[in-house]
Length: 111
Image (cartoon, rainbow, N blue to C red; front, side):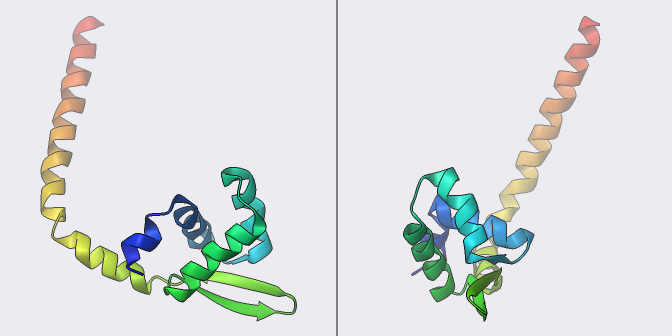
């Protein structure tokens, strides 16, 4: 599965956000994801499996718990792919800065 296919799912992106904060036992992930997305524990387990099998997460067994942690290796490939588009970002940021300055100037005239 391509990295963007993995990242294309909002549940998997949310799980990665959790793992970016710190490692989590599978039960902790389930406790967050089930209420947020309304999927079953088995559904969360399938998403964790996809992340694990595609290199986005590593798991270790601690007694009866499975503890997941983020693996950034596939994200480096995504970052490399995005590099070709970064040339466009400064122009957009400069345009945003101009609009912010224009808004401040207009607010100053009203006061």
